[in-house]
Image (cartoon, rainbow, N blue to C red; front, top):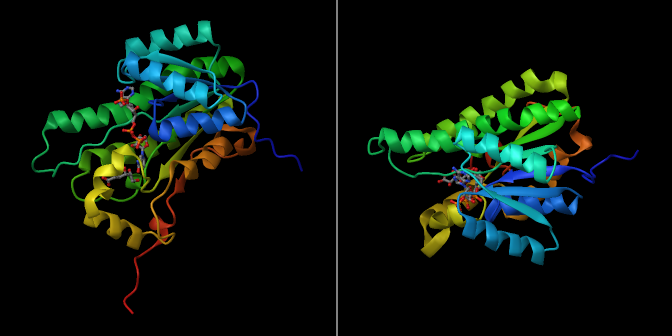
Length: 260
Ligand code: NAP
Ligand code: GCO
């Protein structure tokens, strides 16, 4: 049985991929044969990332646009289509988190997280879908979170956005299946990146808490996400849609260490 994990001849757009999880996902897609397109908010970070990709042997095309700006997204997708080609794979990775107790969080802070983490993926998906339909199909992968399932103190906006992103994933999967577009999510657990650094540094008690709540007994590494993204971007997952694949070391399956 030859299962096709190859992405040869495919064009993948990964949002927010100048570092962190996004860059790791883009490099994995490139290793599987995809041509990489990515975006960020700042040209300097795009330029630095292109150098990083080149050092890793990846030819990447960088564009500056804000995923929440529908006009800029549509103009950029048109430019990408003209300069690189129609997008086969979209990874909605760009996202922010604000850790603020709900009673202290302003509506503006809440709106900003929802805008980037939920509206952004909608705007991006809506913009690339016509090209995918034209090509006869495509893959959309939304980077959700274990906070798509669970809450914790201070991350109300983020959990609401990622919970919504899980349902957006399921809904677009239903709407676009007839066009052979598979829409899935990846739900990372706690991954060691710049975004979670504040929770791990200087003996932060959260560090031992998470390790104790994770059956695998460790923080995830960005490399742990690379196999799952290639699977969901490839023909190997053509009958998988509306699914969120949790890459969390078992944390969502675990009630917690039982008392001795
Ligand atoms: P990160 O280091 O904060 O990277 C996020 C990226 O998104 C940055 O490149 C950022 O660009 C970009 N971005 C933010 N707002 C944007 C906008 N409006 N338009 C375009 N790009 C924008 O985060 P990460 O840890 O790599 O996480 C990446 C994704 O995984 C996020 O969606 C996050 O919620 C999710 N996730 C992370 C973890 C974890 O443990 N780290 C776990 C589960 C899910 P700038 O650098 O220019 O700001
Ligand atoms: C937090 C963390 C988490 C992770 C991730 C977990 O403050 O709880 O930042 O939200 O980023 O989303 O899956």
